[in-house]
Image (tube, rainbow, N blue to C red; front, side):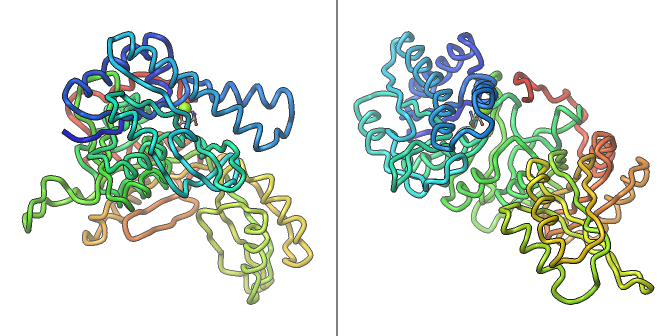
Length: 426
Ligand code: ASP
Ligand code: MG
């Protein structure tokens, strides 16, 4: 019996009852003979509440203090969880990210893990303890300041520890039974996936699926750590995410599903730069300005220029949260770019169809567009990768469009409706 890393999200430990329920589960794993390392998130909406509080005392809190504040959320849950486990008669010790050896760069608020030295965790395990680690945090290598990994970062902590401790699996416990073919909050007939390749999971995460963070899947793929996503509220087996299908043996490859799922994202906005002179170098100037403002962009579309004016429009999508920065940066470069005006639209949504099988199955794109057309949904932008097709539509059309595409590709389940056990969706 090897070492397992289990991660419990905020909705699984939202209150004292939740903490006691999770403690029982952890003790079960220990009784089954595993060495158990637990990574825990802040209780319920604690992180959001701490952010609200910070914003009340200062409009722009310093990164160092902001991180110090946010890491308090995970400290509360880790200590309570250790107490609850001890109360069940088992040994447990809690550790901050720093104590657990999670070393990061010094970019506050979105630090990257650069090394994991889990010496104290190993010792705690060897002494028979269950080790509880605060998720989403670390300590910077140079300044030794406390850092956070960005929202939802506890998943990344869990996978990083699993890699450093050579765990046999990283179990991510959440408020749904696994990874579904669509968000079960939108598609009641979404189907639970038993196994999905890391490749498809990465693409789903990049397309707005929230069940696993992109960075966490990326890390797991690089270190070849299998992830088992499951609910802490039910005993059901969840979804395995790994590089290889565990059912494939030797030359006996088990066939992939053609389509893994439909993801959607309503967190982006669209900027249109209207009346850009159609000459070499324009796109370079526009996107240099955007990059210098440290704004990440997603899709880009350039229209053909009108022959009479020699002007064209360039549209791109970006996170809504970066809209202001991008508009300011473009306004500042107006002289250098020479456009007419800027249009900002935050009422858009993105729908993506993901599956490695589309590489070798012609007609997937046509069926996707047909489903949207049948649902009366107008397409504004299109982008594709080898294993994904995405469209931008009106935000109001997103739920209907997701359901239509899900049905059209035969993904609807005919058994029980997907269950969402907890969480406020905040
Ligand atoms: N508590 C942090 C957040 O809410 C980290 C996490 O939940 O993974 O973003
Ligand atoms: Mg959380």
